[in-house]
Image 1 (cartoon, rainbow, N blue to C red):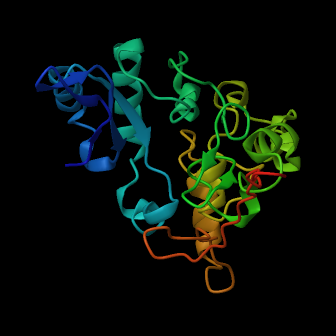
Image 2: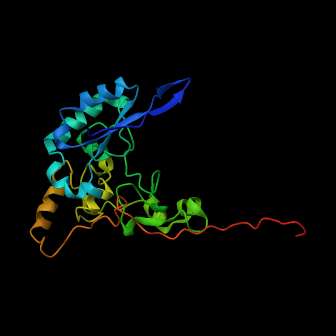
Image 3: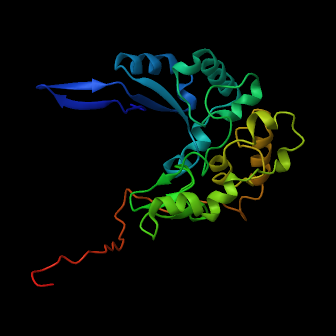
Amino acid sequence: MPSAATARTTWRDGRWSTSPGHSSARSRSAWSSQLDGFKALAHSYGAQLRITRLRPSGRGADTWHDLHPTNRQQRQIYDWLLAAREAVLTGDSFFHLNALGDPLPGLNMCGAGRVVCLIDPIGDVYACPFVIHDEFKAGSVRDNGGFTHVWRHSELFRELREPQSAGACGSCGSYDACQGGCMAAKFFTGLPLEGPDPECVAGEGQNLLSAYAAVASTTASPRPSMDHSKPVAIALGRTRTPVPTAGS
């Protein structure tokens, strides 16, 4: 089933109990007519549905071109989310759809390095869960200063927190609404970060992808840097405080 319940289940007073949480589903083209069903399923478990955009990163890189929604389906998702309002969470997944009209609930910009980041299983910190690539690695919690130092002093995060150039989207009247779209979606489809989102509702991203496809023999989209579903060898270090002994 393409959803994951994150409601907390605990053993209490001799029985299992489930506290309210969130269930999440990645929005894919075949699911656009099933959103009411996902919402009802989450509600039946006392959870709140969160819809997350399918991005061409991780394993999604192999399926995005076949499964990402069409412009017509994006309009359906937008209308559905607009009607659902705060009853459904989206994070920063669909701010690119704000170009269609009224703004959707949730963040209206990319939160990478600003309000979100990812710490992977071996402690490396990336700007967002969808850009696991060396270009967006900010540091490691295993380095001196830990996560606090990375979050406050990473050069990558500092750059991401500065005002961004509209680039090729500067002449578009919808830029203030969509902010140019998703950084990860652009990066892993080979589009420039200052260019349009590949799912730009005006079609500019698709036009650029088509142009890039004509020279696909000489260019290739970036791939995620590491797959943590496979064994990865790392060196773990620990500073141990000497234990005082008698007479010391």
